[in-house]
Length: 159
Image (cartoon, rainbow, N blue to C red; front, side, top):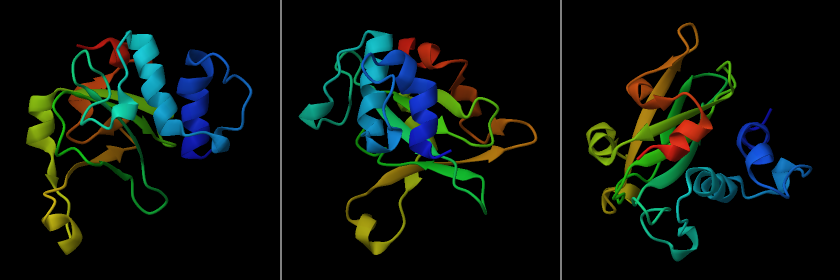
């Protein structure tokens, strides 16, 4: 399954009325995940305002990521440098029993986990990211495991 198909089945289909029978490849999945988080977590979504956060209530930001395959089992949460609040991360993972894992990373931890994006193009921007890896045998993520939530609902309702 593609990232869009996994996110559609595990997050959008049951949380966003009107999207029960659509082709997930036709959707702006990142935007729909942001809206689903707002709906389930009762958060005020301000995504269209192009702020460094998606939710006015706590200045948290939604991120989607996916495990890179087939040669590595790694992923990256991008554009973390300008964030003011926690990250609500939705990671599609074809190796995980649930296929989607959810993380709530408080801003203090974001700052500790992020590293500079390499390359001359990004040096002037001071762009940052959070890299992680996934251990298939243990069903655990590297340094973001402690922030994993049991469910989408738990991640949405974290404060």
